[in-house]
Structure formats: structure tokens, C-alpha cells
Length: 256
Figure 1 (cartoon, rainbow, N blue to C red):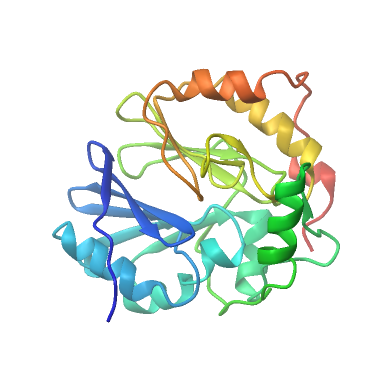
Figure 2: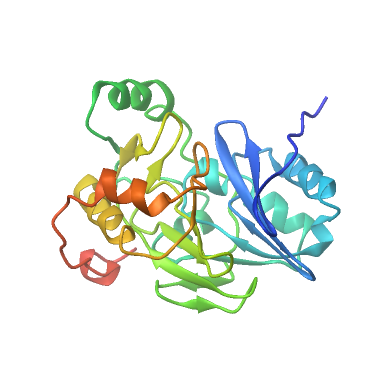
């Protein structure tokens, strides 16, 4: 029997959909449903049932924003696209081509554990030997970063490499700012670094930059949402990194 968690309201029309070890999110603006991330493969039924608890169906879905290429965030994208062919998919260009090929890891961009014995253990238990394939899915809109998407009343795209080269955060402009921080960090046992990164030093600089953004809520791929002064928590944890200019993806390397 399918176990469906009731979507948890973050603020206003924004909800978290718990999918076991990972979260998806939905912005339920009238007439324009926007889903952020799709969970592991096999989660389409659970997402559809969660939307039904809010009074919506996949027929109401208009936009799917995918934060990055990993299996636990893009795994059900292809199935959701079949069920909601009217929905457009948005993703950063440096990870989009991997998802279109059904890949979640590129050989020259290996994940490595973040510092600390717990991260080392979790990486080797949960990530290192996991599947690196998903069902290929199309990406309708390839993002570069810093776009303002005219959906859900306004969403700003923030290129946030480190965990993956093409990771994107999304800043919903309503309710004082809701930051969908993807896997830049996690908040399972409090705010901390994610378990693994392609480039940890770059990931730290991205987090230091996020400390300067204006937002009142911070949502993560893994763990709880921070609903009380997340900028204070970000600054206390991540602002000590000396600021350096973030190198555009085009300067890091070509994506193919």
C-alpha cells in the first residue's frame, strides 16, 4: 500500500512533500502548479497522491524545476513528464545534458565526501556504490543562472555549483523570500554541509554568497526547512569563508 505523507505547508502556497530521504516541494499558485525536484525513481505515484491531498492533480502541473542531476532529485522526472506532458522542465545547462542521457554522475566530476568521519561513513554506505543511471528525460528550458522566471509570481535562478557543477537554487520572491537551497547544504540534524561534493571549496564559496541573499525561509533537499531567521543560521555556519568571485560554469570547463 502506498504511504503518502501529507504535504507540509512552509508558508502561503508553498509546501514540502517528504519522500523518505529526500524532499520535493510544490508552489501551488492558482492556475499554475510548480514542482521543485522529483525524488528517486518510482516516486511519481507518491507525488501525484500528495498533490491530490492539496486538491490538485498532475493535470494542474505547469512547471518542474530540477535542482541538479542526481538520482534522488531527477529520478522520477521522466515518469512525471509522461503523466503531465503540459509541464515544462527547467534545469541548469551543466546538469541538463546528463539527465537527458539518463546519467547522474560524470566520470570526470566524481563526488567526494565532505570533511568529517560521519560524512565519510555516509558517503561510503549510501552514495559511493549507488546507481548512476535514471530514465532519460527531456529538459525544455536550459538555465544559465541569474534568470528571473516568470512563473509562480517570480522565481530567481541562482547557479550554485559545488555539489554538482550544474546545481541551481531557486529563490521564490513571495513571503519575504523562500530559498530552495537544493544540496548546497543539508538540515537533517541541524544546518551543515552536504555529505558529498564535486568541488567542496567551490561549494563553501557558494554558501558564503548565499549568506548575503535576502530570504525568510530555507528549504533543503535533505532535512527540515528553516522557518525562523535562516540567514542568521547561514551566516553563523557558512559566512566565514573569504569571498571570492564565483567562476562561471563556462570558465570552469565545457559541459560536454
